[in-house]
Amino acid sequence: MPAHHPTVDGGKHRLNIEVFFDLICPWSWVGIRQLATAMHEFQRRHPGVGVQINWRPRPLLPEVPLGGTAYQPFYLAQSGSPTAVAMRRSQVQHAGQAVGITFDFKRIRILPNTAIAHGLIGHMARQASPLQTIGLVDRLFKAFFSDGEDIGDPQVLERLGLEQGVGRPMLLACLNDVRSHLPPPTPERPRRGRPVKEDVLSTPHFVFNGAATVSGARSTDALLSSMLRSVEGT
Image (cartoon, rainbow, N blue to C red; front, side, top):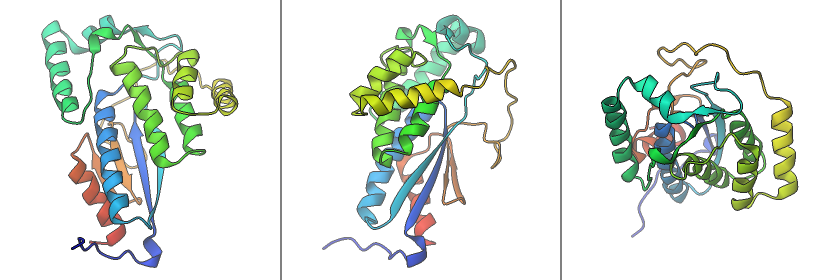
């Protein structure tokens, strides 16, 4: 006997998801991988509800030069000691394993400026389906955290986009447009504090239909529950 799912009324036939993230944040990858799983289940339960994702990049290190900087020394300086580095990496690697992610931090050589990559995601989101765009985002995370690639390099982004089935003319047009509108790198570290609606500083952070929010790499069940509440009103 099929499971009973609450009926969605005519005024709630859309689910709008805002995703605040950064491609150099490992927890963002974990959270977005969980989001993809939650979306599949949501669409199984509510196939008539249209889903839109608005990607809201929140670069944690906007001051990184466009050519990137050495990753391992930077990470060590940020963490304070090799022991602290090992502890942080172990924690996120454990979380990644639970959702099929392999973090290989030792392969990373360059900490990239992610402005072009984030801009590419925004362009693709206007051209492709939500799940297709999530596929591109996931591939960019894998390229950086698993394969050690420089995702700040336009040539790398072009190759990864082609791998995901993006047509070359559209891909090149997107990359060129993004590069022509790049803001200058931020000279100072951004202030950090408690996230608020207009100034989300933690990643990942999800907002469903402008109301229900989930901060951090929460479980698939937590994300799905927020989705369902947003459209079912329960």
